[in-house]
Length: 156
Image (cartoon, rainbow, N blue to C red; front, side, top):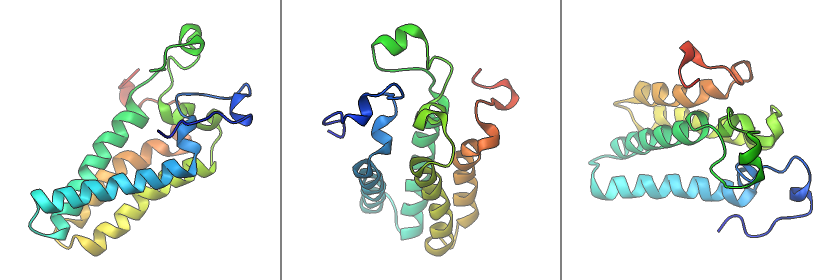
């Protein structure tokens, strides 16, 4: 859906099909849309208050984001890059943008959890620090000082 056509600049040497879709603005809109859909579904089905629904959506976002961006390593796509093992030891976050720091994509994917922290203090008056703690799990691994680092040897 989001990987409709490869542009000329996508075909250059630095093209990484594992993470190239993250750079597209339409993915950013889709990302926010999915979060709000999860929030609304939790609100409609499980939660009594907006705060509970928001906290539930943040928990789901944290678990899914951490797993997909910071835990899984390698290339899920069959092809020459997988055979050469170029991305075998890198997570999706480390592969993104040719390993360059402070790109628009990285800034966006860091800003979203930070914005969730602030919204948590506004929306969820009962559990704002829980929202803070959950988002720390996905903000800290994004710091440039932790690029290609594994804490306590976990996920070597």
